Length: 238
Image (cartoon, rainbow, N blue to C red):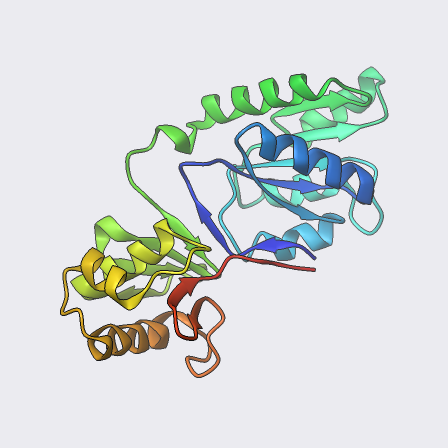
């Protein structure tokens, strides 16, 4: 399984679902080169698990897959979600296209296809559905949490709300906007408008970890970089 543990909605997050390793890699690289954030899953069941871990703007799904194919995955998702879905398949017959669209897919692209056509179709789907690029409200996804800085809170994928103090909001937003980058205690203090001594930032980090981490003693997201500061870690699990 590959899952992205952080995303920002100003960059569309696409989940590519395909059982072919080579295809997944090529599609992921091309989409990233064209301004998308990408995660992948190797089949329909894997995709359902990945969808629990982060926010996605659209899915690119291969039809012919083992365990749970693209048509079945689309039907299952359509029972509870209007998440945009673009189906891919090597089958180009009219009936196959009709089956794909009847399952609830937003669009259908037969292999082989021009990569640029995939980009154009994806952008068209996102535009019709209300592309998050055009939203003014920032939203960050960190594991099971959706961080809404404008609302001073975290919301889990099970609709659990956790209120944040104003300092915690500023601290998490600073880390999120610089995800993957080490921020010193002095930088964090400046960005959050708090006392610049080490202890103040450390105390706020400890409090924030208790709200966001499964085990604050073994943090998964807010990492301590010894001698340098803190970093919101972004990584992929396989």
